[in-house]
Length: 144
Length: 403
Image (cartoon, rainbow over all chains, first blue to last red; front, side, top):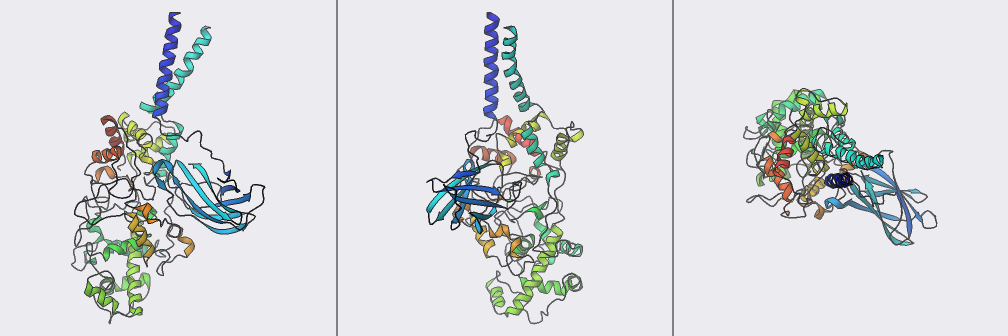
């Protein structure tokens, strides 16, 4: 019985040590962070999806992304104007570049040029989408 | 029951040993190893092309650029060369808080190793190519204090044949004033404004070509391998670092802090230890110096620079000007933001920050731990508790970034 208590105590101590070490580790991606690349806009007007043009997201290099905008019932939205924002919430700074929509590709697809992620960590990429259906916003989370 | 108890005992034991050995020993997590590999010189991409400068990789231009870089006649008073502040035996910097040429600058001289990889030049990125950067101090009254007409005449008088072998015919400067430029004294500006558009264009062309030659030379200034790189290479190859590549426990702890708790490697990232972006880190201002808004001013200046990537003297088409075309122009976001300098060689080149505000590495680490409010704009830093031991560990790691 006594040795059982000792074991239990040892387990508790080790768990606490492990927990302390875990908490002291650099901020890992927040487990609750939704990193999905397809999201419904805040007011439910659109479903937006993003994908990088290149297969790999390279830190520190300018890249092009494709934003696809559809209505909630799946119809492509081709008359949208799009502005891009975002940044790193953990570091009080915005995007290192000012990406913008540079082309309509048809079928609700828009080319977004000038995207750059200058460091690793949690990034937000925000799109303000405006069309005949109205204006709405969507924010994607990316963790590099 | 005994078996069950053992299992209960072992799982947390294994977990905590794995984590603990990663904290103090020479054992790194896979994520840490990946970060270490990304900081190693091995991760440095090939020298990027400079499409804005068609002479960038011309050996004759680079040799001419080296001559110009060290020629003190590149200033009207004959005592200021590029190499006056960018000292060849001092990592191409001068160990002073503020650069001293014809007068005193308001910024710390930047070292030049790896400068050809930088999309933005100067602390505030007010130039977007190596050649347009090289031209700026030539006409700054506190630095070389020359004018572009002075340099065009200087080349014609002293390097006539050498210039023409590289760049083609020199213009006839017989009727061009000896001393005229858009940024000089009132008299120099008046002389510049009195020149015809053709004369200005001809002088600009010669002036730009001097910058392109100096830039071609500066492309040869690459970062040297350091103890850290040798350590990283061994680690990545799953070998035990030997000789001077072996790190002490203190250096390993410092490296772990650098990547982890102290979050240095978020901005000091990649093999050049910079993210090539601009950050307000609450660095104090210097009493007596004019207000310095960092990138806020730098962004406006590079956008307006006639020698930028999109300008008439750039050899690149607009498709090569992504950095300039998509740069942040929301100037309020850029107040007192500066480029993180490389940390390679930093331990042996105090003082630190854009105007040499901090004298020692101890002061630098203390600044990041305290995270003071910025004189203007908003600091990105969060206060951090670092023990005296941890501070020394960080500094021990920074000292491994020496050749």
